[in-house]
Image 1: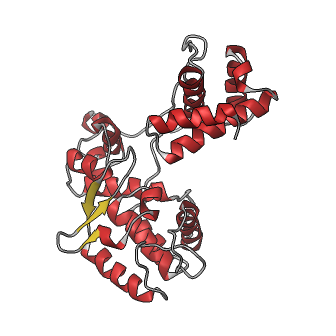
Image 2: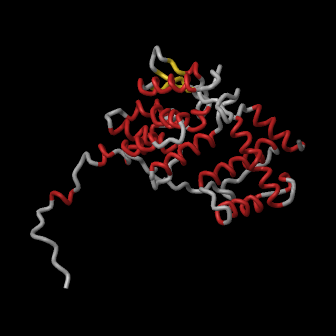
Length: 291
């Protein structure tokens, strides 16, 4: 471990940054250093601008990903090296907001029914029934399933926040069958890793991703299906069923209600709540026929 890497790691640990963020920040500084074949403490604003442009133009990274890379470099220069950082010289990229594609409930049912294995089926049902994030689903433990209160405890979610989500009776029955199907009864993890799902560590996020991809292919769904899409479906379908935004915000673990209001743009109930003004125009006859 180099002296600079050790210094940065200590600064991240002193501020109690999450392990994922710590790995991401250190990886970015190492990548930045490799790009210019030079120690990062000898690089400056000109190199950062060139690196930022390359992330967009050559690597085709999204604005959100580039913003994280810049945050890592800013942390390194400001906190580790105690140097000034000019936002005017290195502006954060303007983010583009895209509405996610939503599956209908019938399509979600097709997806779940097309799961490759019973283990994958339980995974997909859990994602849709609870709205948990991919990483949160992999860290679920059997003790998090509270059948007395009919909730699932999400421990250390995004931002290291705990929350409770509803436990569907249908999901509870599926989880009980899932437990009986496991060859070696796990002591801790709801979704144990290893080939036979009998390991002492949980599955990784790639396992959840592949479960979605394979089921979508078998179900004949043309749209890109990934774990986070089921989270969007969970929120949108709740909203269409009459749940209020504040409730959905709590279930999703959103810090700001603005994050949750995006689902208003996806809910058919809200899209169809008003008629188009075209419908009230007193138009005469039909459109003229072309020559």
